[in-house]
Image (cartoon, rainbow, N blue to C red; front, side):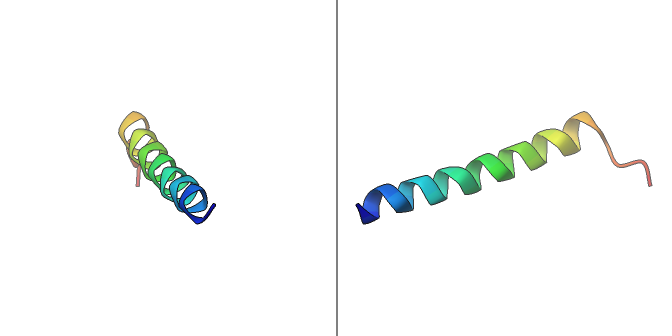
Length: 31
């Protein structure tokens, strides 16, 4: 059960990081 929670947590962190990189790549900062 703990392995499943750890897997889900790492997967969610990976998805968040990936989405952040994609958003930064698609829409470059206009500051």
